[in-house]
Length: 210
Image 1: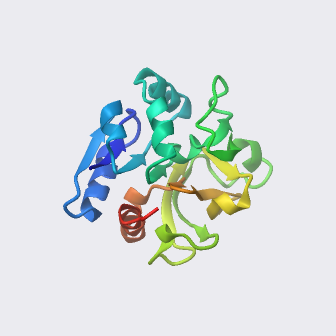
Image 2: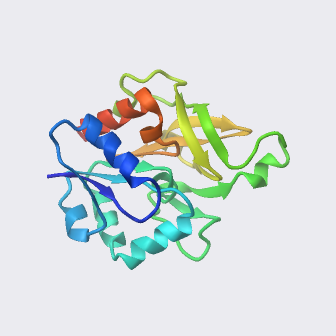
C-alpha cells in the first residue's frame, strides 16, 4: 500500500512528495485526490498552504471529506500547515463552515494579538523559529528540543487540551506548532522545508507504528 499525499490544489505538493520519497526507501509515494486511492493508503499526508476556506471547499468539491474522516480514524496521518489548522473545531478564516473537528480549539489570525504586543512582528509569521517539544512522541525521535523549523502562516491554532499539544512556538504569543492525537500528528511548520530535522520528522512518520 502506498503513502498518499492528498492533493487539494494548495501548497507545494511536489516538495512534500519529494521529501517523503527521500526518506521512504522503496515504499511507493502517490499524490492524489481520488477517494479510492486515499482509502487504499497505508499512510496519509495532508499538506496545504493558503486559505483554509479554499482547502475545505476543495474537500467538498472532490467528495473526499468523508474519506478523510475515515482515514483520520484509522491510518497514520501527518498534517502540514493547513493540515493542522483543519483539524481544529473552527477557524475565523472559515466562518461559513466547520473544520474537521479532531482537536478542540480554534484557529485565529495573528493580527488580533500582535497589534497590542509588538508592532515589529510582521504578518505572516515567516521563516525559522524554535519549536519547544511538549512531552515525548515517536515523531520527535532524533530531534532536539527547541530545534528550528520553517514557518509561513498568518493564522494559528491553540489546543484546548494541553495533552494534544506536543510542540509550541512563540511569535509574540505562544501557539500550537505541533499537535497529536492517537494516529494523527500535525505541524504548523513545514517539515519538507526544514532541512535535516524536517526530513527526520517525516522519516519518523514513515516508520511510525501506531
